[in-house]
Amino acid sequence: MSDEVRGVLLDIEGTTTPIAFVHDVLFSYARDHVTQFLRDNSESGEVRADIELLRQEHAQDAGAPPLDATVESIANYVEWLIGCDRKSTGLKSLQGKIWRRGYLDGSLKSQVFEDVAPAMRRWHEGGLNVSIFSSGSVMAQQLLFAHTNAGDLTGLIDNYFDTNVGKKSDADSYRRIAADLGIDAREIVFISDVVAELEAARQAGMKTLLSVRPDNAPVESDQTFDRITGFTGLTRFV
Image (cartoon, rainbow, N blue to C red; front, side):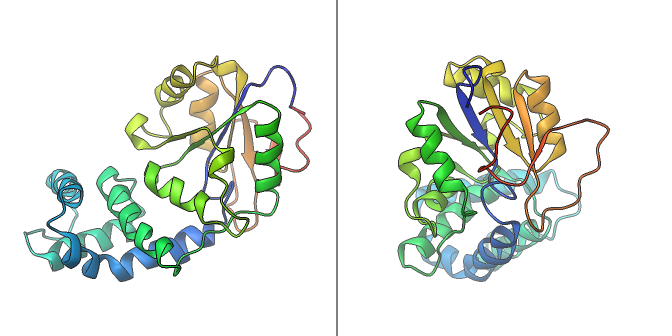
């Protein structure tokens, strides 16, 4: 990449990882295992903290199913949130813990596109900061990149950011990330398949690239973004 870029900030779903893996594998795994996970771990302090976050969200959610103290009720609400693809901090934190069990016992292995590992390695060796910004929890992100079909990629990633830094459609989130990294926003390129996220990052001053991967949703926008179909042939910043 050129001297004007010091950092690469990556979305996951539809950018490094197929959408189908997230929706058909990860979400399904969490949905299928949440009840037993809660039965086994509901007394854990970190799980109780997630449940409290879910209760707080439920209190603000008029369309949600009823929620009481039973495992079945909490699991039902979690399944409903997953079905809505809700970007809920409590949900994402709980999902990460459920997925951790699956990764550790070998029933889960994450997928990245074949050009991701070589590109990350090239950027890392070139001295660029490589960071992830996803609505999934930091734990879920680290687990995903530690157990990929291309091996453990966590050694190539410098930082992880989740919704604790702010919404992905909020320009202030990207300003906070740049400040945390100690890199001028103008020296960071953000790659995502979601126009609203790219618009927010551009507003914050970052360079942007639209990821167009197989099975990604068609993109219609009044904004013009440079489009890439993978990380191999990046030309604007190389």
